[in-house]
Image (cartoon, rainbow, N blue to C red; front, side, top):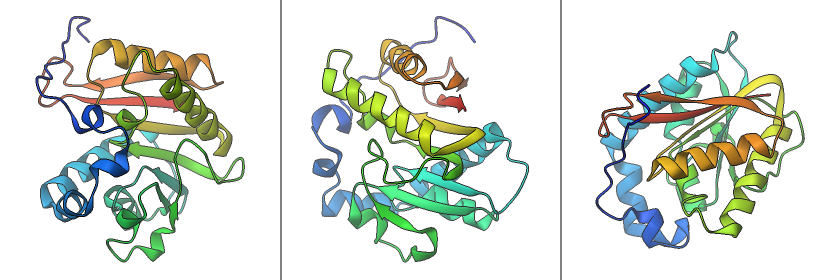
Length: 209
């Protein structure tokens, strides 16, 4: 990877404009997102890549989709033979479609409602940037640390969490990954696909317990 890869973010993103994710996903925005075939296709491709990183050897494993939105990733996982739990803080997302078989749980991904060693794998697609986006915000930092500790506790030993996200800058990207790795017993690394192409770049944090 070229150390000089750059971020070309000219417009303010929703997570910079709105203090809370639920403020952004009002009725109209939420419905538009949930009905978007393009978004569904993008999330499916990201989920396929996350599965490549997870390298799961068995089907019927239990996977948590943290910050799941309407369940695009979990729907694909179920089609591939995995058992899933979808978790999101916005209840309207979880009940937009009939996803009862994906075990929808309304909760904040930073404060786990699950027992230790509950999941064989954890994925999170396009949600982490809502939790940590300001280098100087101590509250965001504490929430990030708590989320990372929760992920570690509820993941079974010798398994992985894979988090895909959209940081605005290289500084936030590197600081975020360092905070997680320095405050948990996770071992991990960043995986950046197409690092020098901002439009095609996908960033994953691979965390191993």
